[in-house]
Image (cartoon, rainbow, N blue to C red; front, side, top):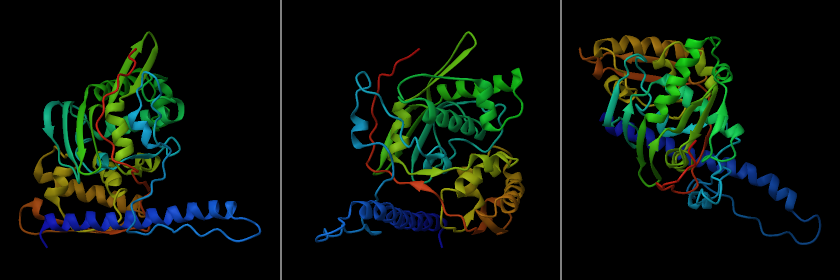
Length: 347
């Protein structure tokens, strides 16, 4: 089968699973409410038809459609999915936005189109890495827990930030590295478009400012609101990912956490999608080491794998996996989120 068609089939199989799983979850949530509201005597009210896999997806989120129309000068912008601390947009785990490559010398780019599954994606500014992804997710988790308004700045402690990431090193150099990543995130301008769903453009953080010994962040609604309401939100088990030793293993962990079905993928496709920036000839060995670590330490996701050598060019070799029993945990988007501009309050 043609490789592009194979990937398309994988995504279609995933979409069917998401619709069926979402309908099942909706039925489970509806059943207790129906029992609680059922009359104890007298004629029974007609049963509400339950959703099926062919029905439009029902979202389990805590943000309504009017959120997207709010003028931030008069109303707060509530952070979506505040009760889903570990859930993040799918396209971030299915693209080269956060590359599985070297941290040092990541460089800067201008309107660079990045490989992505089901999404058009360009970035300008600092080239981001998996380390930056971990730090961005930590900032979003803190905002979900502490900041009622996405348009308002919130204070952070770098030491607590580091501890939350699982870093034992809280010396000055380590904290400076975290702050440097937060600054890169505030300078990185990302534009994304998911056909038929959502689009957004803006820096990944709107504000990263130090005043004396105090540090402040602000989420950028122009980027984060459509990303967090218009795309599927998948649970990324950050504590489990923390135990993986390489950026490539961490990227693969997140990637496979957003897929239910498994189809063969050639190494050239994966090399581009993960943003690997090392020597091409080294990628097969790096991938094998990362997959061995995943199958050993995270068997619930990857039960086993093989890499079939096809010809001399490593890019044409095929990765074949057998998934473990774990199913992706996700939240479906409720409506199409459109790009919007918000005049946030700067420090």
